[in-house]
Amino acid sequence: MHQSHMIINGQQVTSLSRKTEIICNPATQEPVAEVAVGDRQDACLALEAAKRAFPVWSATASDERARTLHSAADMVRQQVDGIARLLTLEMGKPLKNARMEVLSSADVLDNYAEEGKRNFGEWISSSHSRSIVLRQPVGVAALITPWNFPVDLLAWKVAPALAAGCTFVAKPPSLAPLAATEFVRAVCEAGLPAGAANVVHGPGSTVGAELVENPISRKIAFTGETETGRWIMSHAAAHIKRLSLELGGQSPFIVCADADIQAAAAAASQRAFSNMGQICISVNRIYVAQEVAEPFTEELVRRAERLKIGDGMRPDVDLGPMFSRAQRERTKEHVADAMGKGADLLTGGEEPDGEAYERGYFYRPTVLNNADHRMRVMREETFGPVAPIMKFGTLDEAIALANDTEYGLAAYVFTNDLKTALRAAEALEAGGVGVNVNNVIDLQAPFGGWKESGLGRELGRWGLEAYLETKHIRLGL
Ligand code: NDP
Image 1 (tube, rainbow, N blue to C red):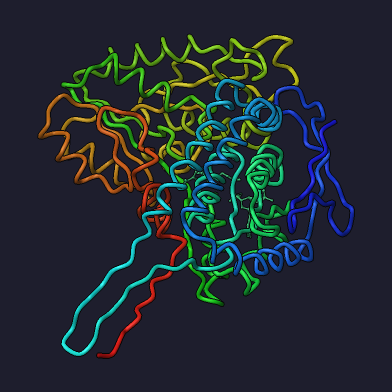
Image 2: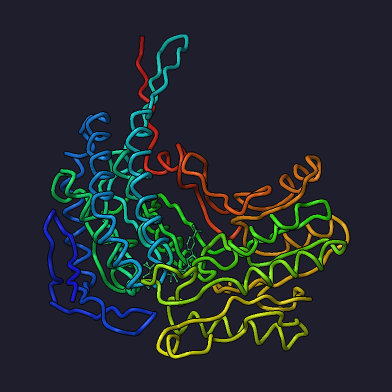
C-alpha cells in the first residue's frame, strides 16, 4: 500500500504523534494508502521551516526562481502517471481526467515561471523627490485546498507563491491528500531550498486552523466551502492577514431562443456532469427560453443517458463515482426536495444498477424539468451531477433569476446575437461569464468570485499579485 508522508523542511516525515489514517477508493471502498496525520504541532514545525527558508528563497533572483519552476513543471510531467493514478484512486475521477489535471498543474508552474519575471517596479518623479514602487513577497503563505481538484487547485497557489518569492505550507484535504502531496514532492525535486515547500496533513479544524491563526503565515490562500471561508476570514482578522478565498458557486446557464441548441446542450451536459458535478463552476441551474425548451431538454437528456459511468481506472468511462457517501446523500436529498416541490425527473435520480456499482458511490446523471427557486437545487450548491431546468420568457427575466443567489462565481449564456451576449455578460453578477463556452478558466485570465463566492483572484498576473506587498521608496533630492 502507498505510504503518504508529510513534507517538512525538505524531509518526508511522519507526524509527531505517529498517527496514520487509511484512504479508501470511492469506486470500491478498498484501501489505497496509509497517510501520516498531523496536528497543530506539526503545522507549527512546517510554518517555522517555511519562515527559515523565506530569506533564502525571497532573495533568489526572479530568473533563477523561473528556472526552478520550469524544472518543477518537468518533474511533475515526468511523474504524471504515478500522480494521476493516486488521484483517481483517492477521489474517483476517470484516469484520463486525472492525467489532464496533473498536466495542467505543470502548465501552471511554467506560466508562473515566466509571470514571476514580469514583477516590474515603477518610477515616479515629483518636485522634490523620486519614488520607486516595489512589489515584494508577502512572506510565508498557507495554502488550503479541497478534494475535487486537489492537484490543480494547489498548483494555482504553489506556482504564484513560489514565483513571487514566498515560501509555503500546504494543507491538502484530509480525505484526498495523496496526489497533492506527490505533486509538492515532485516540485521539491526541482531544487528548492529546504523548507520552502512544506505539506502537512490533518483535519481542517486543527491543522488548517493553526495555519490560519499562527502569526507566522502572512497570507492565506484557500479554496473550499463558503462556510469554511467565512471562518477563515474571521480568524485571519486577528493578524490582518492577506486573503485569497475561492469559495462555493451556484452557476446559472442561460440558453436564449437564438442559441445553437446542439452546442448549448453539449456544453451544459459536459459542465453539469463532468467530475460528477463536483466542480465549483459546474452548471447548477439552466434557464432556457420557452421557444427552444423542448429541443434543448431532449438533447440534454440524450447526452446524459449516453455517459458511461464506472470505476475511474477503466479507460472507457466518462464519469467515476462521487467522492463520498455524504456527497451522494446530499445530491439525493436535493433531487427528492425538487421532486417534492413539483420538478419532473427526466432521467437519472438513482444509483446505476449492477454488481460493478455496488460498493462505490455511483449516481446517474440527472435532469430535472420545471424547476423553480423554491427548490434547494436552485439555491444551494448541490455538488452533484444534477441539471435542473427552468423556462423563461424575456432576457431580463432570465438575468434576474440568474442573479437571484448569494453566490457569484461563474455564469454562462448561449446566444448568437452579439447585443444579447453583451447585455447578459455585463448584467450577470459573477467573477467569470462564459459566452458560448462552458468554462471560465484560462491560465492567463483572472479567476474568482463575486458576492459570497470569494475574495481576490487566482491565475494570470492577478494570481501573482495576491502574493506580493507593495512598497514605496521615496528618495529625497
Ligand atoms: P471544505 O471547505 O470543507 O474544505 C476545504 C479545505 O479546508 C480542506 O483542506 C479542509 O480540511 C480545510 N478546512 C476545513 N475547516 C477548516 C478550518 N476551520 N480552517 C482551515 N482549514 C479548514 O471544502 P470541501 O473540501 O468540501 O470542497 C468543496 C467546496 O469547495 C465546495 O463548496 C466548492 O464549491 C468549493 N470549491 C471552490 C472552488 C473555487 O475556485 N471557488 C473550486 C473548487 C471547490 P479537511 O479536509 O480536513 O476538512
